[in-house]
Image (cartoon, one colour):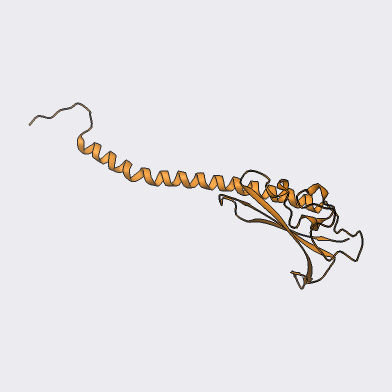
Length: 162
């Protein structure tokens, strides 16, 4: 039997390389896909948080209530002369409740946001929804993305009348 010394690969070595690569590539691809998804999700959450903070700050910049002093208005939402489709007509925080202005509801493609505003009272160490008018309102801004990368990002704050 003759032995060749050509420095090439034998068929057995090629099979071993193919098997090793066949076992190594799927976990690597899965890992890269997972990293890509996590990166996209992190960016979507950061964007959603920014959009929520943006709306929350805009709401907080408005007056506490339609009335400039107590007693506060018992009805929440846009009042007469204010249009839920035009945020520029809003003059107090609770006007954003039920807002349909696309500048509020759609800050960017595939993102949706809305605001909830209600009277609250402090019970011990917990803020509770109040069945009556108080000097405190809880503002909750929720942002989500249609593809689920950012789902229900909530920012909540309490504002006081004084």
